[in-house]
Amino acid sequence: MAAPKVITMLREIGVEVDELTERILGMLERKENISENVVAQKLKLKINEARKLLYKLNSIGLVTYIKQRDPDKKWWYLYYWSLDKNKLRDIYLQYKKAQLTKKKQQLLDEKKYVFECINCQKKFIYEDALENDFSCQECGNILTGTKPTEIILRLETEIANLYEEISRRERSGQRLKTIKENKRKVEDAKEDRKIELKKKRETKKRAEARKEARKNAVAESAKKKFNTSKKKR
Ligand SMILES: [Zn+2]
Image (tube, protein in one colour):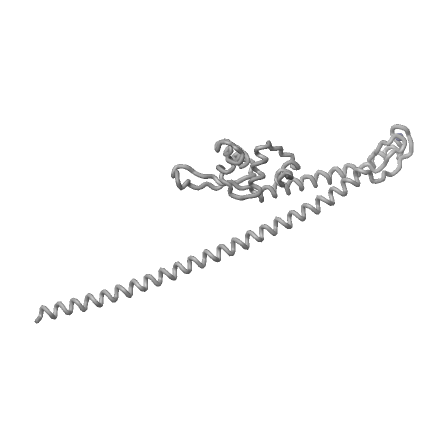
């Protein structure tokens, strides 16, 4: 089985995780809100050990949890864990951006050496070449302009790829955000509708109660009238 995506991403960033943590992350990548009982069971750990590993992942922001009171043991909380995929995506994107900055600087550094001596293969920046009348400081040979080296070509490809990847990741991040926002709007509308219906029901109830009260009052006064007329007789 291929390593979970989250592990590949973490390795690339330079975060090493032990085998147990790797298995936990793999589980959380496949499913949200896993109880630590399940994590412990699957990894044959004690619940406390599983919780400790999960807390460690939580402390670096990779996983989140919700806690709920255990219906059987009221003083006990159950924890349900999820991988914070947004956070992971964000960490990875930041890493890619840092890589891009680094590579761009490397490329600038490489491109600084615009002259070289084909005799001793030394390279010179423009200012140094000018100062030495465009001859080699070592052997006096006339300097020639450098051709783009393999390093430069490689860096240029890497930079282009990074630009492409970053913009793709930003676009998909934006898409996810929009989906989430729309979902929230739908939920909000549902909630509003619920409140509206509740209000309507309450108004109706109050109206019915008033009607009932009026009816009772009428009945009551009729009874009184009847009684007084009885007494008069
Ligand atoms: Zn030379």
